[in-house]
Image (tube, rainbow, N blue to C red):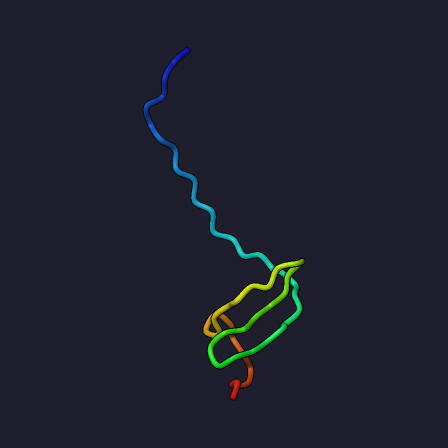
Length: 53
């Protein structure tokens, strides 16, 4: 058996799409329920058509 001393690096750059229920919108965060978990996301991560006031 030979030993390979080189380390192979794998880079993955992909996008996923998840559907969830928006539970709350605050000044700078959006709370979304996906499955049984509520996830807090920064508002800056979204490209919105209209500004949120």
